[in-house]
Length: 400
Image 1 (cartoon, helix red, strand yellow):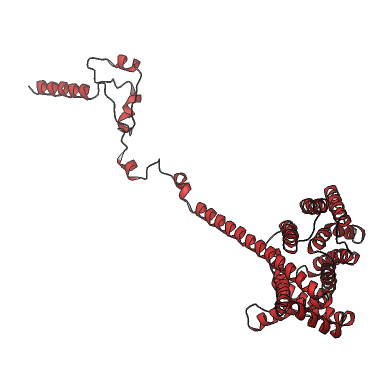
Image 2 (tube, one colour):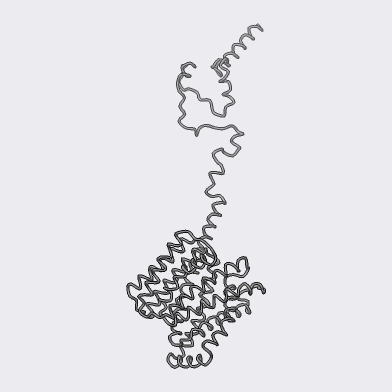
């Protein structure tokens, strides 16, 4: 009876095993399915043998029904990674901030240029009005430097601006720069007292030609061919404009030419002596104005003198009235402000951008002075001015 019971149990066990695992054990590779994270897919059709099932391809319509083991489910899903969040990561925020700063810098430079051009136009208008009524360019130049120096001394005394830290070596290095600046300033004022403002600035647009020639023959510098070619329209345009100027005056023409040469030497001395100095921008121009004032004052007294100034002042007041005093104050204040802004902008931009801005400044001055003073301009004269200014723009592109 015991043997019968054991035999019955073995048969029941065998039958249970056959039901739960119909695939023969000799196919050991399929025994690992119970450890797979994927569920066992059972065929819904009954009566199919394993050989028939294995011959049919397995089609998976969706992976949503697949489940992972408990350990895998507790971990972070594989499909979520840091790369997916890259568009909201911190580096993108930094780029946005840099873009905002770049836009703010562009706006700042644009405001510098607009202020620079506007102040320069206003200065030239009032300067020409003063010189028409009071033809004493040496005193007018002296008053411009004196007003700027006084404004900066007040700013330093009231701590509106920080006073620069200078020494004897600084002023010694600045002296040749101030000499060239003084000559250029007086020569330009003499030119504008004799000819139209537009003509003075047309001739002054030829400054790059003087810069290349002085650097070539005195300093031994060499330039690429496009720089030399850009001088042709500058020289040709200035010559055409001078030849067709209706109110041509040799003193006015020579004043503009001397101003060009003086400002070239000012730039050369400034680059050679002031590199590495801590004083720059607004304070640099303030120191330059003060030293130029000390240099110019004795020469202005010797050339014109107080007696001529007193007589001319009374005559101007009789013709213009009290507005003449405002004209003198305005031209002196705006002269300092436009130069101060130009030096401040030079600290913020590249030399190429500054050269382009200077070219555009001359265009605004020429056009505005022709409109305000009704200066007669022939078409050929305007063509010469346009060619000279175009050459100046090409020079700035080729140089930098």
